[in-house]
Length: 488
Image (tube, rainbow, N blue to C red; front, side):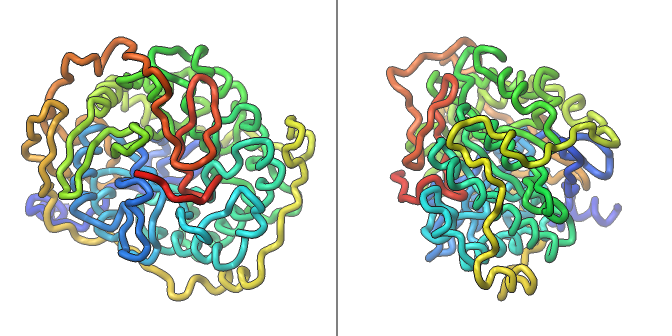
């Protein structure tokens, strides 16, 4: 302990802040404390699809100076989790993973990429389900399995987004989940959960949920059953309520789940500036028995105008007004209560047995026969990826941010640095108290904002289903609804 304290004082330490979490029934649980963990997250994909470049070795977790800048800002914001859509398993992520770990933040990782052949497509999914594709997903598991702050893997993102895709994709998406879980079982020393991130298209949402969370007879260890179920939902826009936003329908429709459920994206921008009023409800008793928090879309400003931070090629950045609005909402939460709830010793929620009766929408797949492994895949599952990427926590020599970051009013933030947390620490408001400018008088922290003349959300793919009062802008850079280039 004295050595650890001395290293912290010197600013160079092999950070070991977070405790690997476990899934127990419908909850994420810290095994050291027995307490539930609720996700207070932000979608992290600097540069959008352009932030992933296989040829140059660039991805969101490849530049430690950028990661240090963003970890410091996210620490100030109060988040404890980032969702990263595109990672290159051939790139070393040790320093970035160590930085976010020290800052008390978990990572949820999509195993797919926007490149053709790196994802399961929603059209003719059988054509994209082959050994080379699975090898890519397994390589992501290998690259991140040794970091204690790797929270989960998403096997797909919005691949099922309407009745037509619901007619063909579900067996293949559940098969990919099975294959990744099988690889984790064979090659990972802890059971890192694998799940699916769904589009909040109410016509098919609950059928999608039932398809992934039911128990399939003859499925040893429930390997094809998702360990978690998440949804990208934008139905709460501006000044709304639990019922007006249809959050009440989500709680009713997903109650009794035997796996953790959370928002893998939220933060409608049809009404601006965003006030993030839904934050107080998501972490309230109205939802916390069913939901385990959520992930705000998104960290960096892109063409679809959902950003919290505007970053530049030279590494400098400015906070957007939405950053301060979200920070204020997080600061209102009682984190002692949110993260201090003792998880029950056992869950009364039992998943149903897979049956056609679970599917209510005509045309949605109600057959649970899954495709067999493609040729060559079993050999990879048995023997492992070769060569396998290896990740580990490393020493960070300096926690000070080298780039200039400004407040929305143009004033520079001084003394910006990551504050390494103690072992088994997770980030929350107050962990990093670097001074930011107070919210300006532009309505960023109160009122209902101003409605735009048209929806400002521009999807990063071609499939943009509507849901509730909002439009779904999900990046869909996991397993794809449409594999396409994205204009940024």
